[in-house]
Image (cartoon, rainbow, N blue to C red):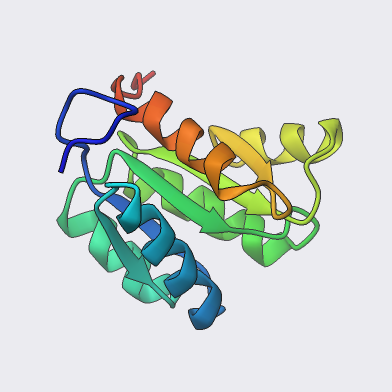
Length: 133
């Protein structure tokens, strides 16, 4: 389904959050706005999905203060080198951005960001391929 934000068929977006209710609400909202989504509620399910299918954007819930979450971001970047990773975290200050970028995220959004802000970010990234360097 084409949306007012872009004139192309959007690529699928993978959503990951261990909070099943929250990720399903987000998937529903993005689906209403024309973004095709798939949902993963475990790290293993997410990694299996991205290894088997191309996702232009991946929206993942992370805690930039948790070493396990940062190792997960590293592993996700290796598994999905061509996908844009949008991390959603409780902090989105300059230090948190630096940590997220260092571990493979392309963007960091605060959990308090509106769905419209997230949709605009997804739409912008849908229009270009991620450089592989």
